[in-house]
Image (tube, rainbow, N blue to C red; front, side, top):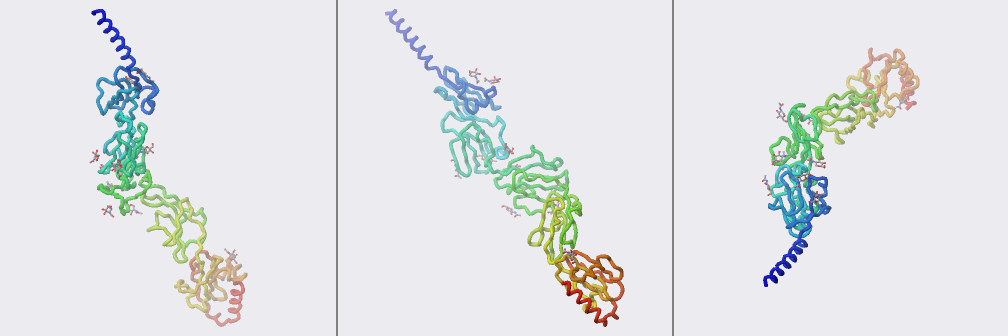
Length: 424
Ligand SMILES: *[C@@H]1O[C@H](CO)[C@@H](O)[C@H](O)[C@H]1NC(C)=O
Ligand SMILES: *[C@@H]1O[C@H](CO)[C@@H](O)[C@H](O)[C@H]1NC(C)=O
Ligand SMILES: *[C@@H]1O[C@H](CO)[C@@H](O)[C@H](O)[C@H]1NC(C)=O
Ligand SMILES: *[C@@H]1O[C@H](CO)[C@@H](O)[C@H](O)[C@H]1NC(C)=O
Ligand SMILES: *[C@@H]1O[C@H](CO)[C@@H](O)[C@H](O)[C@H]1NC(C)=O
Ligand SMILES: *[C@@H]1O[C@H](CO)[C@@H](O)[C@H](O)[C@H]1NC(C)=O
Ligand SMILES: *[C@@H]1O[C@H](CO)[C@@H](O)[C@H](O)[C@H]1NC(C)=O
Ligand SMILES: *[C@@H]1O[C@H](CO)[C@@H](O)[C@H](O)[C@H]1NC(C)=O
Ligand SMILES: *[C@@H]1O[C@H](CO)[C@@H](O)[C@H](O)[C@H]1NC(C)=O
Ligand SMILES: *[C@@H]1O[C@H](CO)[C@@H](O)[C@H](O)[C@H]1NC(C)=O
């Protein structure tokens, strides 16, 4: 009897011990601080080991991930255990619950890594909370305007929502030049970037915000606030070189780029570049940062951004004063040039001069060959000058008195008129 019992006991023990060894679990084993860190997070199936009990996936406070045999003291949420072969494939997600940095920074630091529960349906989730903060966490699949999920470890590390505006954010003495360390994503999904300040050592940059008491709100019309709407656009220093432009009032139709002059410095809230503006038939050119008001089609203003770029021909009706002093009393002195008769002059050059005691003003191409020669060579006695600025530039007063005695010299006058008309 005793022998039989011992025999049964021994057999049972042997069977059990063999069962036991076939019951031992396989568990994935790795350590995220080891050489295979990436695989441990993303693809832990490289390395299995035998374990007596179950498997676990655990993470320490600094984000070190360990997969292996079930830890003696495995408590969620930092450690999840499971009981089937190679079951410890738990994904790892970013976890950041409603803190400012969850929305405004890339939560790259491993301290935000969390092990998700041992369940097939776990994904990494990014969501906007009811209070407009952002949470990153383990959860079940979602896909709508305020929630999105993804299936691989750490796939929820990016900014959410992805189109969240990013701006340079700083204030005070070291805020004149931007730096990478100042990059912040905006709290509010509809934010833009702003720049404001009173000097190189008192600048402020950041995100506009509808509900914070900051100087430059999203809809600010304050001229001190420069608001821009693309990522990292708020870069302008307090002052910058404004380049150079052709600067003139009542300018000739075309200008020479070599005549450009410095536009000095522009403030952060000023546009730089050159303009050409046409008022009536007067053309003016200059620096955008010195222009009061806008430059747009409504004020017949065009702008360009390269140095000295405002040289192009302006197609304005080119006009000259056209009169003879015996017909128009003020033609001699031109005291009221705006009231004298004008002609269109496609040639672009006007002249004025004195022939036979009569003051004559007109388009240069209307003058006879002889008169043109006398003008071009400044032949004495004719006081002839030419000019080429668009609006009635031939308005110099003549010196001396108009020779009334010549009024009767009809023949000479007729000859002059014929000369003028024949060359039209
Ligand atoms: C594989 O698992 C064993 C046992 O846990 C461990 O000693 C070893 O470091 C692991 N190798 C890798 C590459 O993780
Ligand atoms: C994980 O790996 C690091 C470096 O290889 C080692 O110092 C640490 O003890 C490991 N931790 C565990 C629990 O194996
Ligand atoms: C906003 O809501 C989230 C999720 O409910 C919470 O974690 C967070 O603490 C809240 N934040 C504030 C500032 O109320
Ligand atoms: C977040 O990371 C992306 C890609 O690496 C980068 O372009 C962006 O500037 C970062 N944003 C912040 C706020 O750190
Ligand atoms: C988006 O999905 C989440 C999770 O499924 C849900 O809680 C939330 O109410 C949904 N939001 C909208 C705007 O549908
Ligand atoms: C985000 O909002 C918090 C308060 O809700 C504020 O303290 C912080 O300055 C804001 N950050 C940015 C970049 O606007
Ligand atoms: C600095 O700038 C702020 C506005 O951006 C202004 O209110 C303040 O008076 C300035 N401080 C100095 C010392 O100029
Ligand atoms: C800006 O918008 C906020 C909310 O949208 C509003 O309360 C505020 O009056 C607006 N301010 C201006 C200057 O339009
Ligand atoms: C630029 O800001 C200054 C104050 O910093 C202000 O006096 C000026 O009017 C602003 N200029 C423009 C063009 O908005
Ligand atoms: C204007 O007319 C004069 C004389 O006819 C001629 O020499 C000159 O080239 C013309 N200029 C233009 C721009 O047509």
